[in-house]
Length: 471
Image (cartoon, rainbow, N blue to C red; front, side):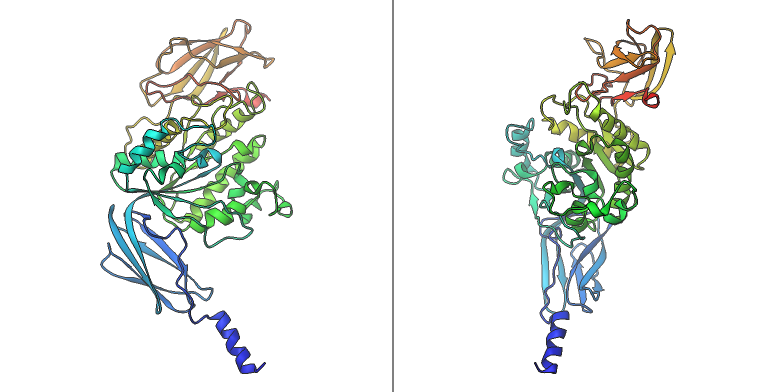
């Protein structure tokens, strides 16, 4: 072959003359961008050319030079909530117009099946009050939803399939119930457009949502055992970070909501280290500072036996992570579990509790009660144990049948069901006739249980124990 022709062909392969201006799918019509912020727009184009951005809410254009690897990214200032707007993105040969763009509040939601579970429910597993909410969603066209297609990858991907949908009877049934109900509460209260991006996969563990660089910091992790052909792709370490999180990580969000943990049963000590490390990595990648990270504690379910404590240990770690992860919050689900169904039907309740945390901690409604009673101290007083709690509500909610779920034990660490007595709005005494000298107390520390200790607003306390260091 003529050397000149060969050289020209090589140049064309490296620098294609008709290279398209490409955007990731998360940057598309009907999206919501975070208001009053500096958000990123990014994509691909011919190297060494210039991409120009003209957003209708801004008076001036911005431009960026495309790098040698064909990628570009630029920050764009956004104004207060409003729209719809258009964004014009162009290079020398092509113009992309993004239509129906709103400015408002944007949240990322992620996790496993309890986050994935759509408004229409799973087969024979309903979402309570879903039909009414689906019909009413027709009124909320300023709620926009993006669902990333389930994708695994061994490398950090540029894009993931998905598209922005407007809340409606046609679109809402297929979106995450937790995500939609959360967006709905924020929209009703803040009265601004809400964008919610869902990247979740049922059965996924925390390792799948972490990068290779992050996981390599843990001696328990062996990179040589990563099998991209695994029959459980949602549990392949790094696979969902690469395939689903990385493609949307540049999208400016206000915060993250998370519902996961069931797939990390029996490795609670490792989860306590990996979960905070994952949160830090996500925040670093999103590059919006220490953004809020609010999560749902896993709900009671029988798992490997209703009276065993396998899932209670993960709930305990999730509670402890509140003190490890800055700017975090946790919605307790101890009262909405189902012994025979791992997917609670009360997704609206869980979402509302997450939204109360956001409204109180992120949006300035500091007076809004957003967490149930929190255990503080235990003091043995002869044959009884005196417990104190912190509450944001006006003390405990009275219970006609008494507060159930407490157990006490002596030095032998054998626990017996306890009787209870409310001493004040923040104090409880517990005892059992079988234990003359109690030393430890547990509350709802089992796989399946029903939490009855609540504040006057109905917000439940988490399960807890005082004997952790006696194992």
